[in-house]
Image (cartoon, rainbow, N blue to C red):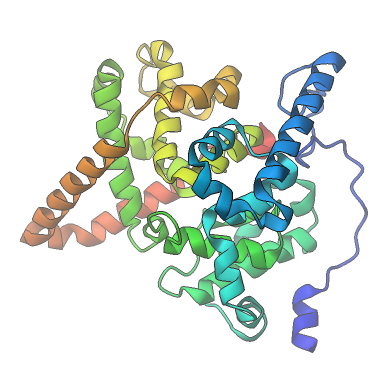
Length: 383
């Protein structure tokens, strides 16, 4: 019992008095709106009325506590897909994310497992997790207080997962996934959703994004580079000429599913679709960002390209503009072809002696890619 108390207790601290946006992030001093766009009272009122109408539709669709969800999805899959793409009401987002990810079923099938992992197990990653916690959404009120409830919950979820899957353990970047989930659900719910994602309860497993050598990151970057060349050949060729490769800008898009350096109102809309449709949406959103900025990017030299990747214009990160553009990219079948192509290349490389000798260098290179992904970008809570 004392051990549990040590995990759950929080140190008292002053209640923050800073103005926050509708998601709980501290507002910039210039007093911009929650989405970074100045809006009139009449516009906010129209949005409120629209949101209430959507909320009523969603409540009718999912039923009490999600009791009607599976039945509705079977009967009306196209309606569900369309509504998810338009955005899940924020008040229902946590529940719906659990329903569409398969994590609710995992939770019900594993009673008491999370508590055991948190209280009675130890992790080799504990110090690393503690070091990174303060870097996760630092301007959100839930994570502001040092050793406060938010940071403790984040520590518990990450520690539990590092014990649950010791092959993966903990890798920088996982904190943004867990932190995002904790803004919408309890510790235990967030843990099982993390498990559902990494172990592939509904879609392809994502654990390869965090395993030694980041094998899935390498595959996704290969696929993404090919897609850029296919859909935007002029830009793709410009990147080659300027020696720009996707590891310089897109690694954290995949590792955190746009939860690290993008405005939060875009992040949650991407996650709505990602949890329902899978990883293809990360490719689609990435392509849409490049397409939106295409005419400017093709003119920029190496250094200015790197700066542009860290500073997309505000209009480019408006979900009501970016997501419809993203959905115009039909990538599913080509992603499958590119995965097979990448695996063949990988098998050929692994068969050669020279590649075996260079494997330690490859691991170091991917480690640098992971560090670079989180070293130079601005956290989305600060945008």
